Image (cartoon, rainbow, N blue to C red; front, side, top):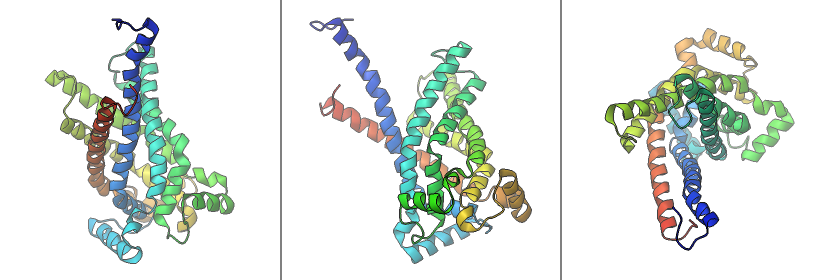
Length: 315
């Protein structure tokens, strides 16, 4: 319906603006939510990485002891060491992943004849896997830097740029992609299962309740389930990539290949204690991260909407 007194072309632009702003708002709010959630669980994440790259046995007691000793030795802020690199990675990763996921869903939907409808299981899994792979390929060096900063003392790497410079000079540029293969092998099932589970639960919820959208606490539960299932399925490869990423500073000469790393971990530490070390901490921090992420997303989205209604942003 044309707006009175407004040319047709201009009316078309005004009609399209809300959807354009909705996409932009979602990208911005998603990036902010991811950053806040990662910051909230950073001490737990750092502790998990330290156990993943060592041969020490993991337990809740030992994890708490490590957190306390780190606090006593290096101070409270040291618990967030490496989080700056995480922040640099989280923002582009979230934006690329969600944007590419929408694109892949559109492409696969058109190919399978489900344009604008819920995808069947296999394309639903493929869209998530491809989105995770795309985001990982473009941001992997930042994940490598984050892992190095998490397991080293402040004296070794002073900041993100220093990590890049030292690795490039002392170990070569190829080192920035060390552990890339197990990462991709892990991302394929993780991203695929996570997106697949979340969207399947939403679809099942709609069919059972006849409500178009779930309530916030239901989204929280769906996201937590999706994250836990995805992490559990891909966790061994996460341990392998951490060992390979940090081999240059932890002295892990046997961590040169995926199979070699897997064989060494299983032989020296066992399957459960080695390949699944720290998984229980992921089950703790996962729901926390999802809760913080959803809350932050809703708050940021409401704030942007209020600012726009107040005229602070163009419509």
